[in-house]
Length: 167
Image (tube, rainbow, N blue to C red; front, side, top):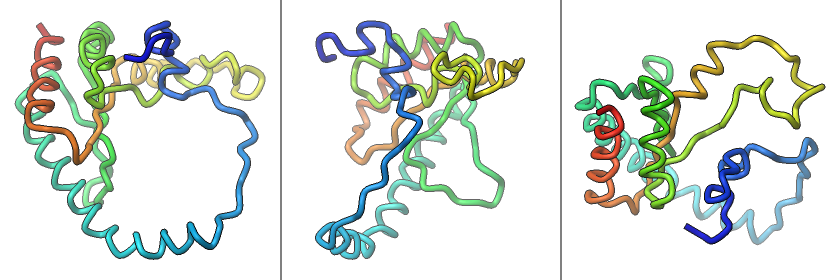
C-alpha cells in the first residue's frame, strides 16, 4: 500500500473515488485517440468475451461459499463484467474480508461507501431521506475485480479471505 494513501488514512470515500466535482468537464477527443479507438474496436468483442468467461468461472467458485451472494443483472441479459459485486451476510463479515484483501492489491474494493443521502458533500442536493435498504446494501457490499492479470493463486487467496470472514 502506498504511504499516506487514502485507505491507510481511513478515508474510505477518497479511497473508492466517491468524492468528485459536481461539474464534470467534457473534453474533445483528438483525431489520434479516435484512430486508436477505431483499431481497438476490432479487439473489443474478444476482450469482452474473455471477461465474461473469467467472471463466470469466478462465480462458480464463489457459489461454493454459501454466505456470499453475487449480485446479478437481469435474467437473460449479458454483462461486460469488469467486476463482480458481492453481498456478504453482515457489515462485520464484509469489513473482515476487506481488511484482509483491500490493501493487498487483489482487486477487492467497494463501489460506494454510503447511501446517497449520507454523503456530506451531497447535502442540499440529495434529500435527507430514510433509505434503509440502500444503507444495508452499502454496508454489506464489496466488489472484486475481473482482471486478466489475476492469477489462480490470487483467486485462491480471495476465496480464502471471503471464507475466513464468515467464520
